[in-house]
Amino acid sequence: MITTGSWFVNEMKGKIPKDFDLGTFNFPVFEDGVGDPDALRIFSTYYFITTNRYPRQTVDFFRYLTSRERATAFSKMLDSPTAIRGVPDTVYGPLMHDVVRMVEQSKTSFGNPPGSIGYAIKMDQPMTDARYKLLMGQITPEQYGDMLEKAAEEVRTEIANPDLLRIRHPWAGSALLMTVVGILVYALYTQYRQAQRRKIFSGTTSTLRMNWCNAIIFVGPALLLYLLFVVKPGVEAFGWALTHWDGITERRFAGLVHFKKLLFGWH
Image (cartoon, helix red, strand yellow):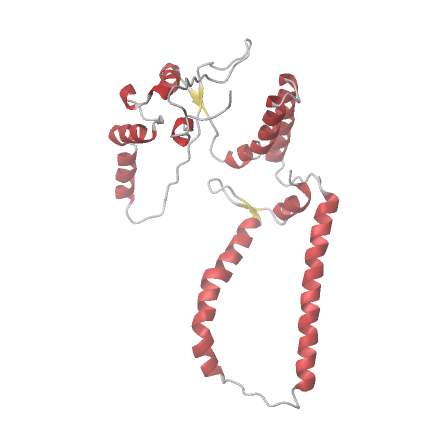
């Protein structure tokens, strides 16, 4: 028994024995729960380009991609359901019958609201660790729930205070930082020594120097390409690293908090 998505059959195509009986059921619920036991956990990501010269064509193309005809072709090709109503059951293989039944019985669904995907990803590793311990018999189901609740509480705290830093690896982070600083100091010192040597021997040796015009002709194109495709993206990426932004919600300044978390607070 594993936790997986409706894409499982397609991902395991050619690896599932023909006589294998694959069953599917929804997440179990508590007897005193308030949610719909037939609700489906869904996840999907769409990217919309809001600034383009052809908004009408963009909308028409999206309508084409989400049409019943395209959804049917998609489900038939990948043997996986879509969110488009009206796809006939006959396009699915026998291993997907339980999934189709779950979709037909479901009246509602739940997923990640816009802007929360970054925090949902933070639950992946704690959930993987807890699931491994549960399947290996190292913890009880109650302890499994406690581990997930503890991880979820940390995520909720981070949502309330995204600049909060929990120091988990003080020595490892400090050692890495000191190593980087040491390498930088050594590189600067080496450059300084080489400059001093060139200054000492500059009067005893003759050198040929290229004038500025020739230098620009030979080096200019390569330097321009390097600045355009290496330096500029690097500066932009560093600027993004100084902000809180998930690509959807409004971007705001964060300072060096992300770098501090990478050094001292990563799980």
